Structures are given as structure tokens and as C-alpha cells.
Length: 120
Image 1 (cartoon, one colour):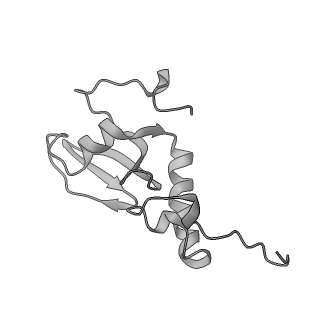
Image 2: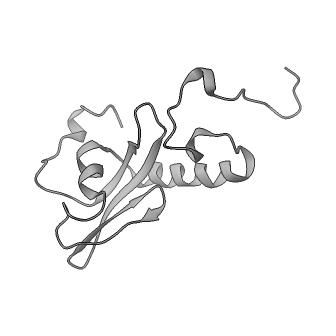
């Protein structure tokens, strides 16, 4: 998908719809996967793999309004990839920015990429 202001990102602010999103928790932070879902009459959000509190009013459900207003809509495929990247990074790249979404990502603080079997 294209940028945040592309036509496919257009949505009504007053009408929450279930879907998959990505958003930054802090300025220049890593974009975490998010989901707005509905179970019966209750709305809830899943933010970075963690299900949050439910409420009948979507704007009162924890983090749903934030995801709806500030998130970029993504596909299910991209949502699953972002979650899988976090799982992979826990074992193989403990310094990866996806494990620290509340820290800004700046080029000067990123670790160097090391490719096994190659010398720098």
C-alpha cells in the first residue's frame, strides 16, 4: 500500500471499522502492528500482539480510537509479517528496533548488519 494520505487510506473519522493497521507509538519509532476487531457487540484492539480491553463503544475501548485515527491501514499479510518479525527478532536480533517500539529509531543508533560467513 502507498502512503498515509493515499486514496485507499481515506476513512470516516466518526465511523470505526475493523481492520489491520500499523502505527508508531512514539515519534520516529518502529511501526507496530495493530488490529481493530469486534466480538459480538464489543470492540477491542490488538496492539503489537497484545489484546486490550473491550467496550461496546469503539471510542471508549482501549486504544481503538488512536489506532483508527493515526494508524495506516495494511493487509492481513503485512500484519502477520510484522508479528513474525518480532518473534524472529527475539531469538536472532535482540537489538532490533521492533523489540523496542517506544524508542525512536535513528540511523546513528541502529546496530550494524552482520552477515554470517562474511567478514566486514
